[in-house]
Length: 298
Image (cartoon, rainbow, N blue to C red; front, top):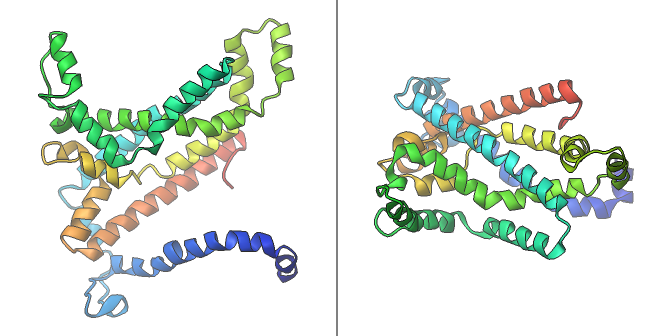
């Protein structure tokens, strides 16, 4: 190994910052995970705080909010996966068939642009467009004979608004990897299929999709492996006291318990439980994918 490192030291030097980053910010902080099994007392520190076993886990499992947090987290994550995952694939397949370069570049620019907007801007746009009295969406609804609605405070609209805005913001950027995979499709296969009388849809179904199938499977595994790790920022910005029953997820509850209420051990236990569920899902989905089509992360 040392001989290999000496011979390829430039490559090791190139990857060193990434390795150092993960060690410092991801592995060393794991030392603090033990507070999930302790009653953390700041004056005593992590090591000297008393052990309490699974007390904080039991408290979370028996809490009033447990079912709501799990249900909301899973619902939003699976809803997002169900809608957001196939849209970039469809967009990439459609763009791949466009032959007019200026039109293709225009569509790509329009769909990529939202990715560079911050979450704060996107949520701000939602509040402006969906304002009950001044929002353009409610003006259109009223003009068509409907009644103005308060979308941002209505619990039944929260999940749909979250998912659809996520699709709008991420579909263009997420399609890049599929477009890159589609660039590896052998054109001779398309020519042979055309000679055999295959239509464009048949060529997409039997040539393009099987070509990018390994990429789709890998990204699906990664998405399912993080199904409980729904993003905090956007949920928190869209959340208010009126839509809390639909918007309260594990990450926002951890914020309230750990940061606002200073229940560090309790919030650490919730975070550890969340991470263990994600890790288990990742391993299980990867195992299933490897058995089904021999494509997996490891």
